[in-house]
Every structure is written in structure tokens, then in C-alpha cells.
Image (spheres, rainbow, N blue to C red):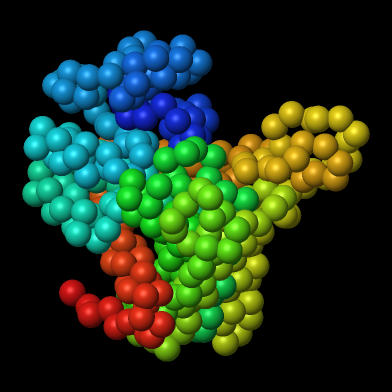
Length: 347
């Protein structure tokens, strides 16, 4: 079969992880890279041996030989780029969060759905191998009824300046990291058990000179079944990315720990190079993580979306899922302001 031809929209951090994931996916080829900065597009294309680099989105969307467009752009660009793709009836995948707000995400979902084309929400957490295995064990009945999920995503702060700007991103640490934890909780409880109430706390504790948003947050999710999701989110945790889940049920518990459970531990007196995402040091005692793109779920999600394009299937994470996550985040920010539980009406 002919390879699925991909245009990567973006040339930064997440686009680089997507290319790492795609490197191990058969039956696809990245034929073009778009960036709002042509020099960045050219550098990215050279690094990944991509035939075309461009800063013209109109030109790229007008091509009739591209099968899938992957939006790996900053948050403020998701809505206009997605709407342009929908108007041109193109298959599209977008990184998290889908929109800066639920209103933006709703526009993206409705336009993509109306186009009749594939739309996939690239939420890595629910594609991570350990998380997928945990869900399989839940589906087998091993945990009984899920009662409580604790999910933690933390590091010492964003890697790019625009992430600190809440106007451009839609929020602080809760907006940036909460997407993953909300998606994990929905995955473990099951999407047929909706979130009905939300409560949040958030505060800027450290990065007063960098952001107007919160750099630490707690988010509680009450499910229709009575179960609870407990999300811990921080931009002030030293030691590299901390990515954990606990799932407790009536008949047992499951624990996932991608970054602290790495099989490699090192002690070096000199800088040892790249260690792990958001590492604060590259010497002393470190826990390097082999095959990050695989462990985090980038490879699995990219393979899934490529296969969905090839076989005409609906992705298991769509823009509807992204919209629901944005609704929960919006409710979280409303709770943060009011200090009270916020009901989430079901649609």
C-alpha cells in the first residue's frame, strides 16, 4: 500500500517528539513541515530529512497529495489552523489542549465533524504502553469497580517562553498538565462514566516573574458512579518530568510510573547529556529514560492515527474528547475562582 503522507505543522518541542514516534511507524512518510518561522521550518526539515519546509499554510493545505495534517503548533494557533483544514476537508490531528477554552474546542470539533474527515486528539497519556496495559487489566475485571484515580504530572516549568503566557495558552500549570491527568482518569473509569462535578485549587507559588497563571494546582473530578479523580499538577517540581498514576478499585490497585520507574540509574561527575524531559541536571544521580517517545505514548498514538487514515477508521481519541477535556478545565478554572464545586451539565 502507498505510504500515508503527512504534513507536520510546527517545528518545536512536541513536533520533535512526534517525529521520534513516527520514526518507528511503518507505512508513512512526512513530506512537509510548516512553521510560522521559515528558518525554523528549514532547520526542522533538515534535521528530520523532510523534503519541503514552508511558512505558507495556504500553500500546504492546497496540496492534494497530503493524507494527514498534524497540528503541533502553540495553543493560540490551534483554532485558526484547524478551521482552515476543516474548510478544505483535510484529515487532521491536534496536540493537547485542543483549544485554549471549551468554546474554541467546540468550534474545532463541530467544524471537523461537519467536514466529514478524520479528526484525532493527540493525548499521549492514554496511548502510553503502561497506561494501556492498566486499562486492559481493569477491563478484565481484575480491579473490580474503579473507585479512585490519582494522577500526577509535574516538572520545573515549561521549555518555551510562550507557554508562560496565559493569554496565548489559556492557563497555567492546570491547563498545561491537567489535560493528561483528566484524560487518564476518563480512560481508567471508562468514558461511559462521565465527570459531573469539578473542584480546583491553584496558586502561583514560585514563578512570579514568569507567568500570571498558577504554577501549582489540584483538580478533583467527581464521576457519575461516585468515583473520584485526583489530579496533581506542578511547574515547580525539580528532578525532571514526574508522571504517575494510581488506580484503586474494589478488588485491587494499579500503579504506573514511567519516569521514576525507568530501568536505568546513573551517577556521573560530569554532564552526561540529555537525561529525560525537563531534567534539571545532567550529572550526579540521574534516572535516564530510554525510548521516551515510546514510553510516553507518542509512538503508539502516531501509529494509531496513521492506521486510522489508511483504513478509514475513527480514532479512539477525537476532537470530541478534546472538547470534553477543555470543558472540564474551564470548570476547574471557574472553581478556582469561586472556591466551590462546579457542576458539569451533561450534553
